[in-house]
Amino acid sequence: MNKDTVAGKIKQAKGTLQDAAGDLTGSTSENIKGKANKAAGQVQEAYGNAKHKLRKEIDKEDDTF
Image (cartoon, rainbow, N blue to C red; front, top):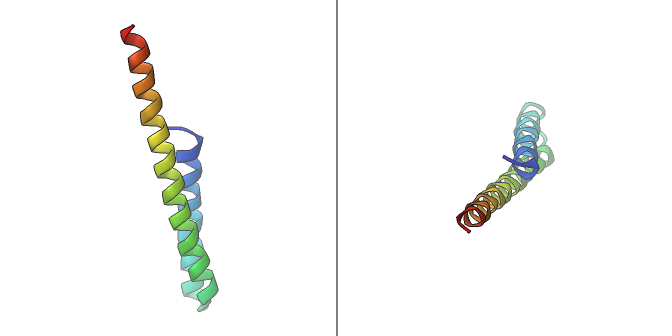
């Protein structure tokens, strides 16, 4: 796990809360912002996971030499 993965998870949680707040208040703009934050968090988390896997593969290749 790296900082991008963690930041992505936090952004998703923020988006979930924002979306729920939009539901409670009837604010469509908050719903949209919440959904956008969730999507951005998912992308950032996926990027962090890919970066982590790549780093593990590079480290594994370095160990074989």
